Image 1 (tube, one colour):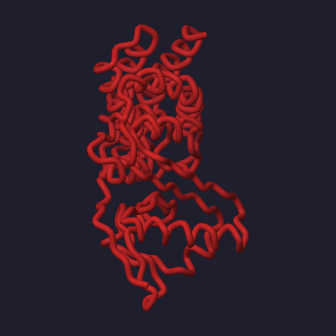
Image 2: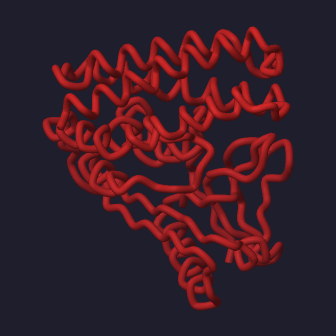
Length: 278
């Protein structure tokens, strides 16, 4: 079997949004992130928001999500068969571990298979630098199996996007607030931080929240729009302290103090928005 589909990963600070943008043309990453809840989550994690599937359905897709911790042989067999069936239909599949970042595996697309190579063709962050091929054994050895298939085969429902995005906000903003508190704890600890990695995390958070704020400017909501703008502004201020890829100076006391103050402002904004919504 040898199949290749015409789909290309779209660069994004959140690799899963980059995959979904490729699978859902012409929907923008800004809309995908807000409606699915991915904009409010740390972009480097595997955890998927509950709002993901209903959000993608409203964007005009039939969605199937597989997320198995400690998958067994049957799980891997079924995943392999599903990926192949999607490729036969001309659709790529988003799979965790296919992409590569400077700090570990991430989401990417499987866009083909070549049985002679016993490998999948992949596209995603750093795949061309590392290798465009992902071995069959890598899938079988995955300690966690996470994949998303998306068939854009129905009409999108833009009228439902603000409501679903508001649900995603309520579901995810608490997670984001806790993420900010963990970053504050890191900065206040005596632990030395790796500048490039810390800068990447801050830049990705700022970029995602900036897109969420843009969505809420286009779809005004008295409960959410202002909080989204304020949180995005605070995180953009923090991002200026830690340029990527240089990294800035996250181990310099004055920089840490300034970053803690900004991140605490952002966390307070999110906490206040949740209290207001309730």
